[in-house]
Length: 248
Image 1 (cartoon, rainbow, N blue to C red):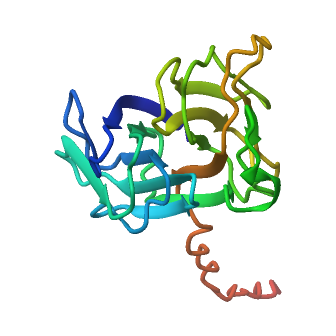
Image 2: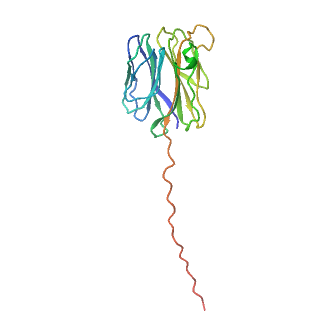
């Protein structure tokens, strides 16, 4: 199984606009999977995204983070989500289509993790943060996506990620809107752990605005084939023993 990114789009919503939507260049293909990530300014309240599973949804007074996914029915072009909370400074999103042409199994959420902006030291402003950790993956042949929502963007150089993750959505400038960064990693084998830490100021320029941050992680892949029905036992056929006649 080989999971790969087929196409993607960025999304943005200005202050006071509570809709994040994007239009694919090519309609989604049935049998693929869709990924939707959003960084939302302040507490998002209730998020509505028809047909999607909200795998990670972290809310706080400063910034909220959503990671959602859905199997593609085929033909999807416009994907749109709305929320009830405040969007005082603006919000940003990322929409992607993921494929695995080597497998026919149903798409599934292998595992998730998250680090809430409400928890512990994450309330403190920062330029670096973790996605959370997924331990002991049951299967390989999957793709991990890490997303990070930051209360404001301001100025940011190209970020760095640990553990071989590669950035697929970054922001370099902005004002008070919630910024979104997304990175991916192919998971080849089962049994390991996965996580990543983003550093929004890897070159220590000092120009990055530290702010509240939330991180999340999802692993998507197709269901692995089961052991199947065992082969039937061979039919028992008694051996006919022929006794040779005595020659006199």
